[in-house]
Amino acid sequence: MNKQRVLHAGVLAALLSLAGCASGPGGSIYVPAGESPQAPEPPQTAKDEKDKPRVWRKSEQPSAEEQEQAKPEPSERSNKPSYRDAGDELSPAALSLVREADKLMKGGDTQAAIGRLERAQRIAPRSAEVYFKLSEAYVAGNKLGPAEQFTLKGLSLAGNDARLQRAGWLLLADIRRARGNVAGASQAEDRASAL
Image 1 (tube, rainbow, N blue to C red):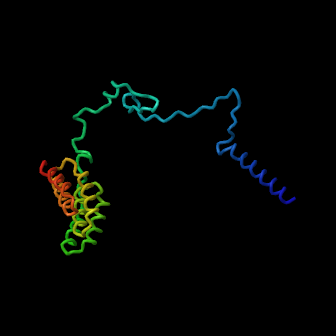
Image 2 (image 1 turned 180 degrees about the vertical axis):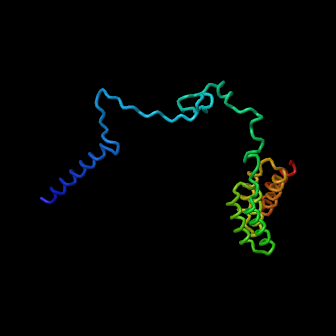
Image 3 (image 1 turned 30 degrees about the vertical axis):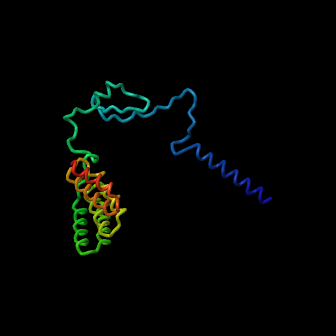
């Protein structure tokens, strides 16, 4: 008998909750036949059709001519290189950490220097200089595997900066030679001399 009452109470609670969903805070969802509810007008931000930026929907595909017209003129493009052309410059905080790491390296505390450089890397994750400094710290700690990886990452971020690329390739050559990879060291030196 108790199980039946609990079942009836559960069904009644479910029906009441469904009834509550049918009428929301705005009233009933029922619209009598013949009446058409008026939706409010969307807000207008631009008075003139020319002032509105064109928003392309996925179903609309502009023609090749329209795409050419939408491209900015070469004079409108920024002359600043993208992150692929050059890495980030060091922020003052990252530069301070690199200087601290240099002092620690001169004092022989490579582990603390690596810690400072890892913090600098988190601040400036696209700075080739930080990766090269990290590589030098790992070389000083006799951890040549990570040193080579950080050098390669720094080279990928050096972009078109010939000075940074040359320094990175020479560093990579030294690391590879220390690891016994004479052929790889020779290739890295060739890349450095080509710059």
